[in-house]
Image (cartoon, helix red, strand yellow):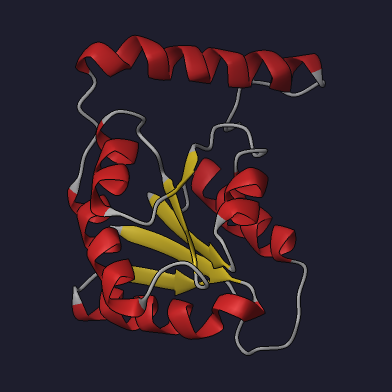
Length: 158
């Protein structure tokens, strides 16, 4: 599975630990920044990862900042993306199984390294189940496309 990862300066150390974990797990991972602790505008990193996921360059993405919330908010502005902030295994599993979330966000000031690895593992091992959630996810896609089209774009993800 191809995974894009990115962070801001507050989450640099956690990103490096998660990246190393992904490599250990034989995952294909591409680091989209940052590469040190120099301050950045995290929305630019979120945009880079979310666009690459929406365009199909990567199956999934992981974004990390201080809380994970700003990354999720920004990533969810990209048409076709469903990003969720998860700091526990159950939420990570449900974000995939029920919501077909392609981007996991976490907060380096909220979660420790070992728990973050466990959350990433659960998220990667979970797959979308459809079923009762399928009409809800389809409606999310329709709403996304409705607002994207209203602003002059084509279908989400195009």
